[in-house]
Amino acid sequence: MIVKALSKLTAYRMHVPKWAVAPTSGTGAGRHGGRANRIGLNALYLALDVDTAVREYQQISPLMPPGTLVSYQLTVEPIVDFTGGYQSGTWSSLWEDFFCDWRGCWFNQRIEPPSWVIGDEVLAAGAKGILFRSRLSPDGVNLVLYVDELESTDRLEVYDPQRSLPHNQSSWT
Image (cartoon, rainbow, N blue to C red):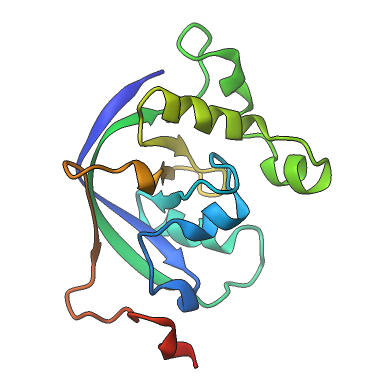
């Protein structure tokens, strides 16, 4: 694995407006699973540029659902850097399947996605996330953070100087 530190990085995420009350929780991915996290493992998926954050939120829909774009400032280490993709000798062969159709594996075939096992290996190695190329934005890079693994030396802050984000669900009743 290639491991690095992220220092004073800005990242972005589009949130479903109703859930913008907890922009650092990772509970949505924890509840449903994600590319690199199994159900029950809270994970925050971020993009390193605005365009990628929007494209990842939109997925393959021709229309953009309503969303709240949030900026983050972070310093986290260690992070696995998979932005160069799979290279034999650098990565275990399991990493060839990082971009598997994890939804098809889990929801259609009812088998454990290989990318979930990769997430388990990353955690077992003591890393707190994975940097990887976006499949939806040609030059984009994504970051999955395992938020429950962050320590006091790590920094994950939402940039909200005017306190515009809702603070609880009463905004939606």
